[in-house]
Image (tube, rainbow, N blue to C red; front, side, top):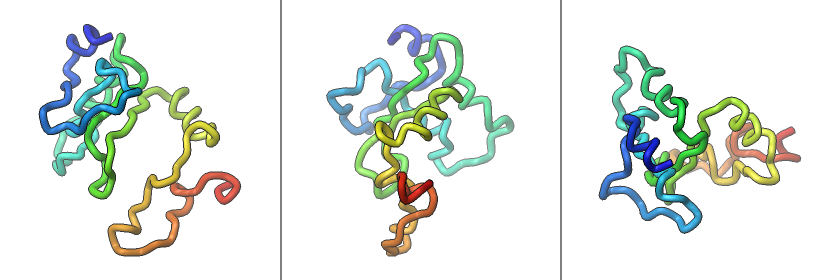
Length: 125
């Protein structure tokens, strides 16, 4: 799969990337800061072009970005790009938890939970 990623325009992580966790295959690591508009710029003529690259034939359906998505995050994050996989992530709370995710209120010094994004069942049903 490393060959597939080398033949796409998905950039590989640079020297500023966090170390990959032991369970992350190196061929799944990509730098998607531009794709996810994490660079701060939101002036793309076609905002879907970059994210469509993640769904190109031969690109793995699950990728890993070794860059924090939020300023208070301490690790990278997984990228799920196909509807069926995204649906499973949202519906399988035993495997995929939202604990520690979407905690934007911490940026303002608040401690309440973000509803519904930061709640797992049974609190979020």
